[in-house]
Length: 218
Length: 218
Image (cartoon, rainbow over all chains, first blue to last red; front, side, top):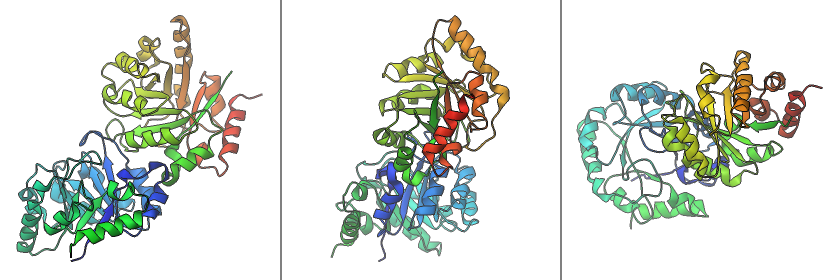
């Protein structure tokens, strides 16, 4: 099974983002958390910062929009260089149209669900998205504890996708570390966001290698 | 007359903010534009980024909140290290209380008005704030053209402050360059935000010196 590691710059040094992203270049993606003080009670960074990150990152950008009105904003993030744009099901007015609008730019579309949102809520979207993100913490802040009780959603999503005849990436975000990653992978996740587990470590390449090793126990 | 130059990092390289801020250290303040996609149609950066900038900046932080609900958020920016926190009159529920809450942290409080908001709107606040910011463009984006027609507000604010027996800084933000700065200073501004006029120049110290020289014609 192919595993993708996506370090989240929410845990990086915002004073030197380019160097921080370079230090994690052995990862598969770089995960960028966009928050607007409204969908979640935190404000991180937005379009002009993502545009610059896209210009300097050696890795594809996995942008996670924790914002209201993704209907209007999601395609803009694809246009400035995101390889994948994830919007929240709970925030979208027309969730299928958002996915189509993202894809029309050439980017991958992904839909995210908060811990309280059931997998079934996005079954109708599985043929129009390229990835589903299952939040394993409440969105809004880094450094939170992993919620294993949401992991059964991953098997439900995989089964529904197979029945719909489509292939998907399944991503988890929140509390992923060398201690929790194998649970997430065993439950069906193939794309793993990790913030403090990468950027709180001095040697980011070693931290990423440790996550890969822990992801699939021998 | 003492003039303060406040380079706005909205025009800086977001991949290397610490180095960008260091490059402008001959300025008096560093201006940080916080936007939330709601008060203005742009999302820039927020609390965790401002916290880090405060840790690494050699200059005091002049934070400009273009966000909804400054009543809740403004004191938080002071707590993470802003020397001055500016909120918008148009966004505040209880504008006087926001100023008091900012000051209670030890930071300077400032109130901003958009181009369409008259100076008189904030006359009642002049004894509870340390600065008024008169926007010389519509807030939301860098690189816009200067609006000289708003400058008469500065004299009205200075006169009202004098009558109220208080001393204030008067800041302008938007379209300030070596070509426009003398108009703003002649109209009464003493604190000048400049974005592209500093960060679009290769030599930031020279750009800041040129603004100082242009500010008060011989």
